[in-house]
Length: 342
Image (cartoon, rainbow, N blue to C red; front, side, top):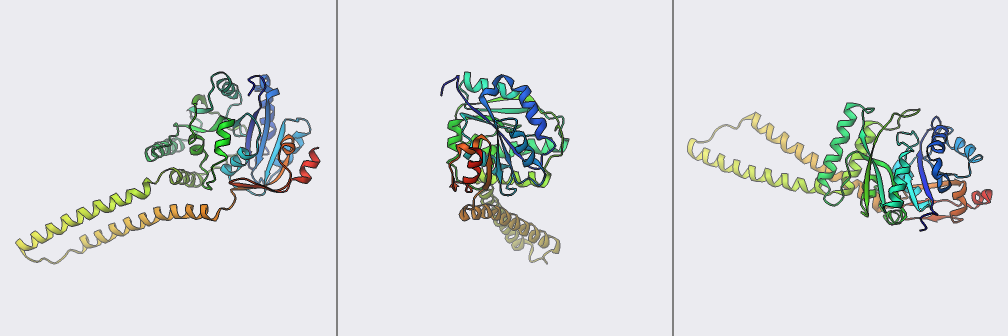
C-alpha cells in the first residue's frame, strides 16, 4: 500500500440512534479534517425502528463519503460489525460507536500508529470510566479478569472495547472465521499481529440512551467465555473428582466409626444437606453443558449471522451485484440498489 494513498473505513453500527447521527457526522468532520480525503464513513443500521436510516440517507446527499449498510432486522452489534468486516474495502477499518463515547480525535493517533509505526491493531483503552456506575465498573473489571484467566491463548486487555483500527490483513483474516458465536473483542485479539493500546477518557453519550442492560451484558459475557475457553466444562470433572475423593474418605470414616461404636441412626439434616449439595452441583454442571450445546447447535445449523437488505452510497458501487454469501452472512440481491448509485 502506498503510504500517501490510503483509505480508512470508519464503521459505525447504529440501532435507534436518530438523535446522534447528525451530531456524529458533524463532529467527525471537525475532528478529522486533516484526513478527510482518506476517510469514508460506513453506517451499519442494525434494524432500527426509528428514523436512523432515513437520516443517514439524507446526509448522503450532502456528503459523498457516507455509505449505509442496512440489515434486514436487528441482529445485534456483533453481527453488524461482522457485516462491515465482510463488505468494507478500506486499507484499514476503524470501529467506533455513534454516541461519541469513542472520541473521534483519537482516530488521528490510531492512523499515525498504523502508518508510521506499522501497528496492525490499534485499540483504545478506557483509562477513566468515571461516567459509568460503580456496579458497571466492577462487573466489567471482573469479566476481563475471568476471561483472561480462563482463556489460555487469547487475552483481552482490560478496558479495551471495540473502538480500534485494524489493518486490511487483520480484516481479511477475520473474514475467514465462520463461527456464529461472534464475540468480537476476542475475535479482534485472536489473529495476533502487531498490536498497541492507547489510553483515553471515556466521555458521556452526546444524546439518547444506551441500548445495553445488565441482562444483555451477562449473556454477552457468557458468549465470550464459552467461545474462547472450554475450562468451564473441564472444571466439573475436577469438582466431581474432588467430591468423589471426599465421599470415599467419608465412607472410610463411617466404616471405622461403625466398627468401633456400633450402628447409629442416620441424621436427617446431614442426609438432606448431602442430597441438596450434590443435586445443585449436578444442575449447575448440566447448565454449563447446556450453554455449550446450545452454541454448538447454532454452529451446526449454520444460519447466517446477518442479512443485508440494502446498501447505499459509494460502497454500493464496490459491492458485487446479485446475491452474495460470505462465511457468516448474506447480502441480498443489490442490482436495483447499485443501479440507483450509478
